[in-house]
Length: 86
Image (cartoon, rainbow, N blue to C red; front, side, top):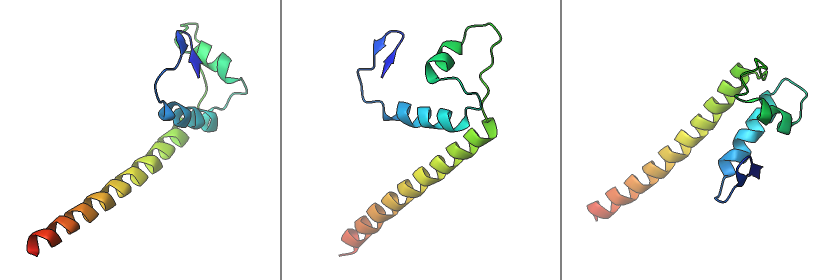
């Protein structure tokens, strides 16, 4: 992955996830390079995205994340309680 300042030098899996979300919600037919150049140019060229779709995607990701954290926490607490009661 390269940007305007050079290559990305740290693990950036979230960029692939956000790029996938952008690809899913982008309603224009431009390629990614043209879309990235359109950000912040002040020329009034709006990049059309489906905001509601993006919000739903992030909601699903949040619910999955919260569920995983809950199960991990629940498992750890159950194991700790069992060790204390022994």
